[in-house]
Length: 251
Length: 270
Image: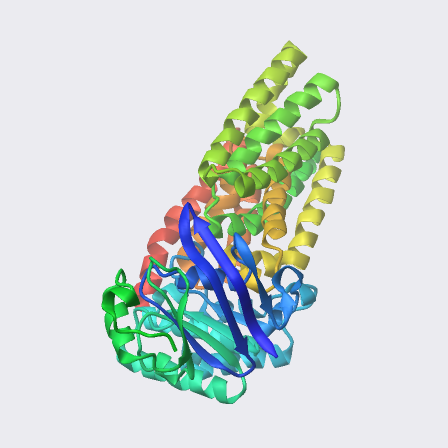
């Protein structure tokens, strides 16, 4: 079964951002969506989640076309940005609990099982003792872990994480890699957006690499790690095309 | 003779309690969405409703309520569909609302113009039994909708994009928050006046957020401050013979000035 599918996705903001992107991610896969800055990774994810309407093409979640998809509790999304600039104080526990809000059970408060899930998610990311602290008082890495706890508490089947390692130190990245690995072993399908090959991305079995600005499409879709010459040149020279470098032949 | 022996004071205290309870409860969502000035915009729209009531001879509270709710929906439609930024949309509503109110009141004649002050600055001692009934119905509606949709409103105020991926209809919930703010403005129209009603939505929350560490805590402390200042303001204004709306707002500002250093002390000690 396809968990995430896209066919011929195209997005333009005056200039093309994505062109004819096609991909298919099956149940239980751990996929790293890679590419240099500005290659449209976040735009693609926003299209896949229905947050942005593509100019062309279509996307599906769990084999349902996005406009008809209603089973959102099966999906957890960890955005790239943090929420430390919340205008009203927000406790760590409240941030995690908000992930369990849905239109399906707006009438009732969280039940015991859901409260336990929140506690377990915070324990998993090592922040159970900070549950009542203000989110803004936590470090960037800890806030990132809170956002991951939100995703863990949902028990979703698909986890989409946008640059979860951005701004966190090596120790935190290793810890995050352990959580990802554990979730993957439990059968969760993971789509990880990243622009580097840290300890988390190296867990992925498959890499989808978005091409440089001149192509705006999928340039590599295969096992991780992508060919080293590709990573070496694209990560650091985002405007080089594979043809420019002459180093990459497709998978 | 005690001030409680007067009917008008009992009605005034009931009206003050209602606005003190409801305004911060909805204000916390406005502050979180960085729309602290939305209440002011809605006050201006409600002014058009009051002007329309003067012109047509209908009751001001329900007419202002209807116009404010329509204005709230209009703001959300403009915010979602126009290319103007949120603050520009608010500015458009400010100007349109006040211009409409002044024009309609002028067309209604001199008598209407002289009673406009009651709505601009509040005249809590003139609150009638019928006014109280309208306030109670509107307040029950706001609190009922908060009880049902509060968690979704929190999720949308916290992170609208993630809320959308949770299957929450973010546009609908955003509109609901704005409509509830509009209803609250009308609830407070007779108590603190259209020009100051936004203050009792926002200032108690600004005071509460200094000493709270959670959203729920901020809302609860904000409501306590709101009710205390509204009731205290009415009683104080009776003794010093001052306008009740201004007295209430100055009390909430005094609370803010007290909680500001208190919050800094609390943070330093943890």
